[in-house]
Length: 112
Image (cartoon, rainbow, N blue to C red; front, side, top):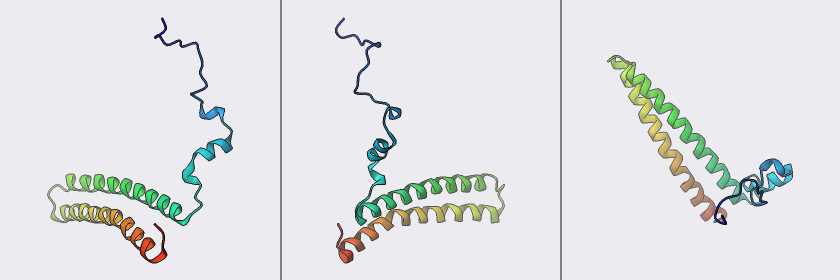
């Protein structure tokens, strides 16, 4: 009987977000609080990468539909292929950009 879970018993370990005040909720969201330039740059880069990845997925799906519904027409096939290629190039640039920004911040601004 000791090993069984008593569902009627409540514990204070599992607090709901509704039990906390709005200030406590905001304090737990540490990414909203940035005191340094480095923190702000990192959060901004992460946000941009997520948005770019979502846009890349959308454009790849769009290019796939263009390709499927091209019905063999050369101009539509070419448009679909260009959309796919530009999406991949853009995504590569988005993933390289943080490296360049961190390099500039580390070597010219003095941030790590």
